[in-house]
Image 1 (cartoon, helix red, strand yellow):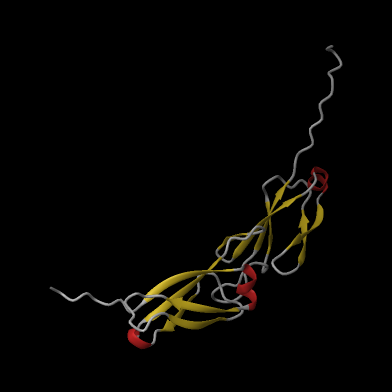
Image 2 (cartoon, one colour):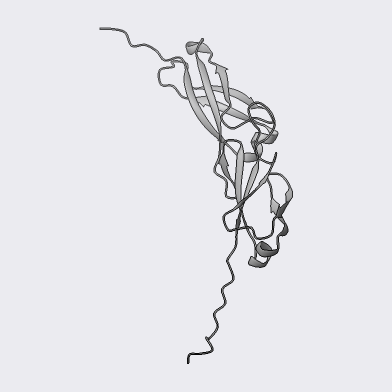
Amino acid sequence: VRPTRIQKSLAQDVHLRLDDFLRGTRLDVRVQDPANPDGAETYSLEIPPKTAPGDRFRIAREGYFHGGLVTVRVKARPDPRFKVRGSDLRCDLRISSDRAAKGGSENVRGLNSSLRVTMPPGIGRGEEVRIPGEGLPKTRGGRGDLLVRVDYRPEVRITRSSGTR
């Protein structure tokens, strides 16, 4: 009978609110391993400001599993306003068909402020306007972009044809 190998290292994903990536946060990491005769392990993890989605943090385990690691990967928690793709954020902006035809600017709520979006005249439904540097932090510095998808209902007018009754 071969002895079973004890797994000292663990990996876990944690989902953060979008603003936690910008301003940082503190987490308690609790490891409940039935193989640990000392019981549950709790570690404090400091997520620094400007952390990028996908970044990993390693915590050295103590006690019975000394020498092992807990690897925590941070991911974005689903958000009602934004969709996350890497460090870029996507949102929708509903405008009038008149605004789409003439172009102009609208306010959109960014991650931590209100932003002015300029739309060219004749912008199509589903087209995106990119606002550089208003997304989540990137691993190598800087920030991703905010992509604003334009939506509107085209105006349809139906009139009676002059030749039919």
